[in-house]
Image (tube, rainbow, N blue to C red; front, side, top):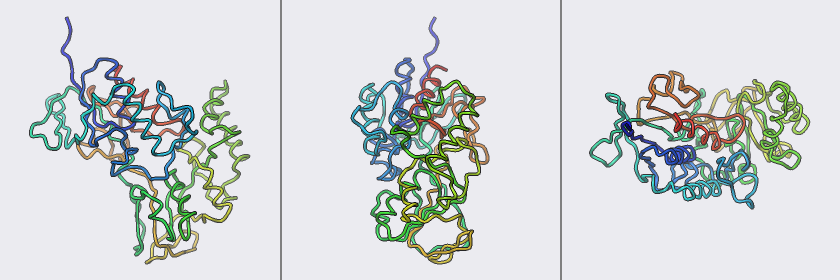
Length: 374
């Protein structure tokens, strides 16, 4: 005898929600997928208020970025632009017939677990929908993390989330705070179009060239990591390779990282280090305090700026539900392998990770298959 057919709810049709939709279709699992926008793509969709910076390129190369079962066009470059990323996600959704299974312009207002079922309220609907399980894929690169410093700044302050075009930097003395990929993308435009580009970092990261021996750095690392050597030895070889190709941090007036290679997400960049070498970007340590338009740094120096951009990352946020189901008191994931609730067998999260090696989309695909299999 067949059992009772269960119906699931998937929230989000961005890069991490799409493979969940595909995996559920392939396994014949009934579901409704709700997407707040009128198209797929999440932060790559220009309709989104949280769309990534206009000059953004994927940090991972196309070999490691693509979904395992869907290639990029052969003629596309190693690293995709924002527009190409969105084109790829739309093409993926069309190729596997995902569009017909997604309810667009449907924003989830609340999700509650009551008497063993999930009650989902969609904005504009009078009645709540009921489901046997919930998969959350709303992304975690949209809720800005704001730092706090003594004093006040009387110039313009933006988070990298709100910088959408290099026009916002033109002719300004720009200070970018933070060391991730958003920071170096914005600094590249500030170095060309701003009056002055200064980079402040409280802690430093490893800066990778995007190409090694003419091949994407991540593809080179992925291939060599398969050599039959202990991982500790491979990391030692990578560290020496980085010293040879890039050099020591102090040569760029950068603080040395306080962690080992691949213990945190490295920053993939080539132009950033070139800008430093040519004096187009000046590096500074962390901020000590703010005073009008003057910023004082921890090394005792200070400078005047028109604009501060905080490229200080994002915090996971799930405003439509009880966040304690996912995050601990420090705002960190408490899920098993960032996917499974440790007690509820009807609740899952997709995309709540930041890999130090490899592309997000590939891992999200494996994660989706794992959820569907479970």
